[in-house]
Amino acid sequence: MISIHTFRATFSRRCVAATSGVRTYASQTPGNPMIEIFNRKAKHLQKDRAARNVEESRKTDYLKDEVALRLCERLLDIKRDFSSVLDLGANSCNIARALTTPNLDIAVPEGTPSPPLAERIAKLTCVETSHALLHRDEELPFNKEINIHRDVIPDLETLSYQPNSFDAVLSSLSMHWINDLPALLEQVNTILKPDSPFIAAMFGGDTLFELRGSLQLADLERRGGVSPHISPLVDVRDVGNLLNRAGFKMLTVDVEDIVVEFPDSFALMKDLQAMGESNAILHREAGPLPRDVLLANEAIYREMYMENDAPGIPATFRMIYMIGWKEGGNQPQPLQRGSGELNLKDILGGGDFQKS
Amino acid sequence: MPNRTRPIEKVAKATAKCSTEAAAYGKCVLADYDSVHKDMCVKEFMRLKDCFVE
Image 1 (spheres, chains in turn brown, green):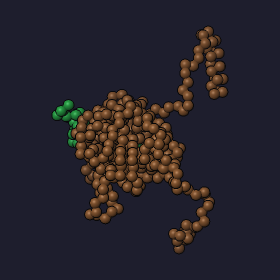
Image 2 (cartoon, one colour):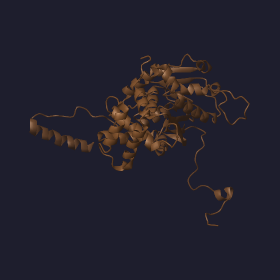
Image 3 (tube, rainbow over the protein chains, first blue to last red):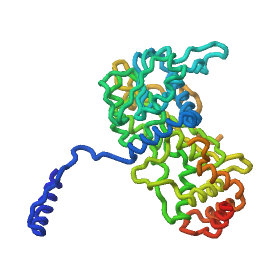
Image 4 (tube, each protein chain N blue to C red):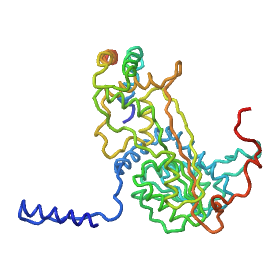
């Protein structure tokens, strides 16, 4: 505050000298500066537009369905009944679909049927900003197997739920469009009941690195400069910090690469668009990519990343899975550092790393 | 827009037949990818584009 005041004093004095009128600051934003990277309106329109083409949108759900399944597998390990679960950024309710899939548990011997996870969930609330996307599949049979409640909210970054109201919060492939991730995670922590898990999957750092690289080179060679085409993404190393900062305990973070093969880079971009995942960076270029750049990109992508004799080009999606628990009563706590009384070497065996 | 071929599909089809030219252009760019500058491979690109427009 002090520095601002001094600055303001000198500034207005200078203004007096120059214009003989006194100017003051119109307003000052309190608290943290708001981080804006993505254009929320554009993202909303993209999702809406993509979902309205129901057939294409369903066809390109392969990635979201797969990740939702893998996310729900993580829920199998928590032997609890949940009275109220939130799906944050539900897309087309892919998590609900995964929850109603029977025999998800691969640990049980084959042939023994295991019930779908939906049986342990009394109520699932799906929130999403796009009405068209959220309600796309509401007529499908899986809706009858789970008590699902759809909630369209204007902005995913402001959750208007009561504190301590959910037994679990799940989120699959939505958080990569959030501008202020630390603030959102704090809200999630607040709406969770004590000792309840937050389980999420999001696109991370190296997602689409092939396309990012080839588009940069194509942009450079054709136009002499680069423009952002692929979102900046969270790095795995930061996720632990983010969760920690939001107050989560007992963190688990892991990474998984899913490589999808496409016939060409156009098919990849077309699919991304149909998923509602096109570029929504705030300061992106207006209009579609110039055709010359697209053409150059295709040639460079193939040359750089296509394996010999492969039928198509690979595109890597890096998933970061995270689990964090809200602090609660009987939660196991880590022991004080240095308080261990057993040497791990005695338990696990093995010796020093000496050359034998 | 029912039954309308999207421009992007046309482009995809056209590039498929120009694989030799595309490979030549790709190799040219990647030969020195640390210092790519505008029109570094304009010759190769024009050849690719000519094939593509045909």
